[in-house]
Image (cartoon, rainbow, N blue to C red):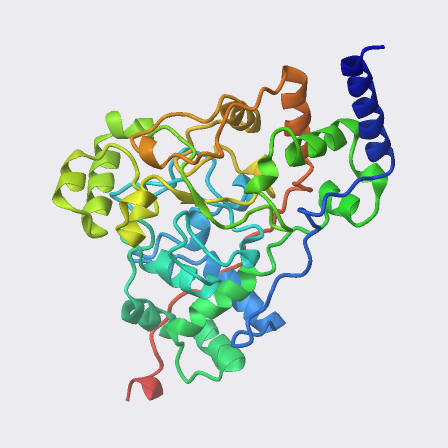
Length: 374
């Protein structure tokens, strides 16, 4: 036997042994309980209030855009379309991210503009192409709902509902929408039978030949860093006038320079926050958990299926308007068709059963009692 053939045979034996012995890479880990901030402890009453507010359009400009409008439980707690829904009369300009396991992120939104779920809730409720609400107006509406007045008094001790406390309640609810019992988690916790042989080979590719683990690591499978991987520009900006207007508005509103405002045909990404040209087209690494239900993928939904995503990386990424900032980590992988299937199978093991809940019954606004008006 030649040295080359011996090497291949030896590698195959090692791989088979690793699979049989339940090899668990140190770069990955099972997901534990979500972190709870000291200034927003969890209580059942707070979570129940947050659940109601999550589904109630009262926290939006015209009362029709609750959090759940863009984070639908039966659509992966996101929107199964390229671009998320916008405030009535507008459209959004980025793909809606799932709230499942969002409790573990230290950076929320595609460019990390919020550092907590509390701040994220406020930003979404007030965003011009999302909730479009004003804090004082939304707070006043809450005061017209007797049930909310009672709940805010019980949970926070408020005489009248405090909008900051509303965001804290929503964040508490979101910290209950987590999934820690996926096949991958069971495997990492010691159950060798939780993954199929195909998925174990995919895990070996994930941490080896495909090197997905370079950015998708840790329990969340995200390093929360920013990269340009060459995702092509959203094709809707070429044909959808409303989408193009929204895109131009966002460029203007985020303080870009005149040249970029007039000429850009692609999302500048992290640049919006830093105004550093080295950050053009960079977005935060998303978690790969629960992705079985959150198609399409990337910040603009330009990749339809998980297999499309793996093929995209296998080809060395794509091309966009920010070629100078494309990550050097993005190189052709040389995966075979069967290896692509194995990698997809492993990624699917990062999702468990679909998380579905029934929307709560919501209270209605009523006139304030005469005693409260004096």
